[in-house]
Amino acid sequence: MPIASDFDDACCGRGSLARKAYRPEPTSKTAMPPSDFDGVTPAKVQCLLPIAEELHLSMSQLALAWVLRRAEVTSCIIGATKPQQVEQNAEASGIKLDDSVVQRMNDVLA
Image (cartoon, rainbow, N blue to C red):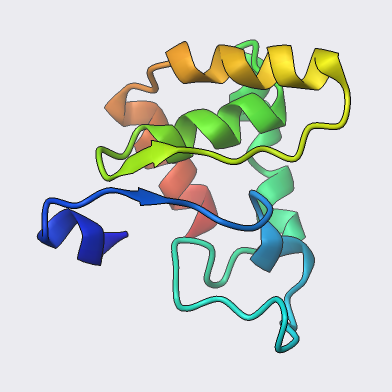
């Protein structure tokens, strides 16, 4: 995403929200270039749960809000399989994470 930002361009994320966290050894079909997810482990992702609970958000809403906060991201492709998931995830588009929350999340994932 830094490249898109440098060129004042937009991008659309691909893959699952935490593909690298849940598939730490990518195959040729799941390999992704270096990204914000490098070094993220399932244990680190679980450490975000208190932040989500504090904000009264689901983990998927927190993840989507974190991704959508970036100006170069124009949309997220969600993998919802139920109408309830679509509605819940759509609510994330209106969530604004303040700088202190983003910093806490970044610290957890570092």
